[in-house]
Image (cartoon, rainbow, N blue to C red; front, side):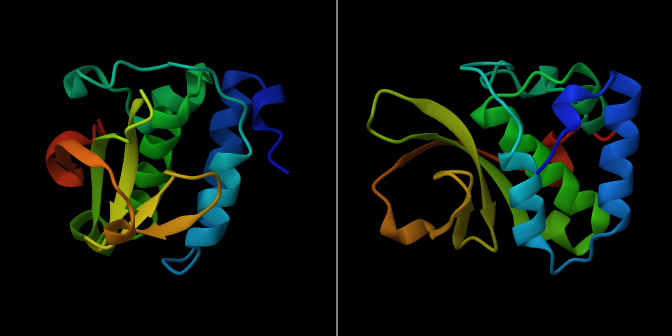
Length: 143
């Protein structure tokens, strides 16, 4: 279980760093589990303004999470543990036809992460409308 939400901001950053240091590019399930165990609210970020998205350290430091910011966290973690994920990872803003618009992670143009709790789902199996696509190298803020 991830107890990061109980830690101070500096301790959260240390905890996330220690977690990342244990990962390999094959640890997608561990990454999903870690991020999915964080408590979240309805909206912690403005999904419509990618220039205002927090960098990974700000995301962890402030500790305010929603479904969309958790998707960012998953993408950031993947891209930081292995550069090969940067070309394989995209962030999609989707409308899932249930009156909700949020961010999800698309891997290898085939799999959605964080659409459904702790699951990896084949993208083609879903009836969702993609509103915008963000590439990791252009839109994720690592500065």
